[in-house]
Length: 240
Ligand code: 6PG
Image: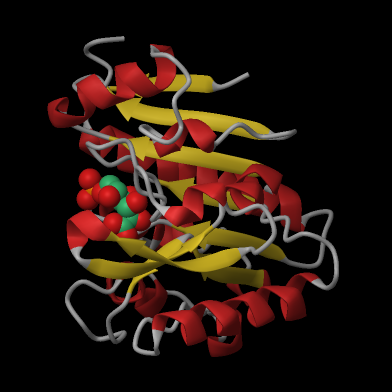
């Protein structure tokens, strides 16, 4: 059952998301050796990354045992302004003592199919033969109902075998790299971060509308087990 938490505004959402990250990481690292998180791209998580990098929160996490992955990536080099990795590096990774070997970025600069195959191998190497079980996956929600880079009507929506694919997105006239829905649903915990009135209609449709994942791919996020949290601000929740 999804848990929906409504907070005041984007600043409160960043605060809550960062606090939840620290709590989940510290609790897990008290009983396990490492903690694997898949970060989201787009604009919404940036403030939460910056909040996490602040000393009062950053000092609480044993970053040497945290492994960073991405839920999706644009097919651009890491220093490109549209790079999801680049955004997270500037907002968080450059400000915490995480070993470079713990940062597993999608290589957006490569040929898309090659980049997807390389990340599949990276996930197999890290998680072994079992299906990847991230400890936490952060997700966003596009106004068209996409999450990660699972866009309406695209081939990646129907993927059931691979962990990560190169997904052609006609409306963007671009390739994207994205984790697939089975991997997102296999995680121990996944949290959607959603802010702003422009997301209110789609949030209502995703949470309360008919089940049509081809049209609203965020509806594919239906975990077998583990937590599904929607962390949204009042504006985004205004139609719920
Ligand atoms: C990306 C994201 C994507 C994002 C949504 C929402 O790489 O763009 O991973 O899924 O979360 O597009 O984006 P905003 O937060 O910018 O509204």
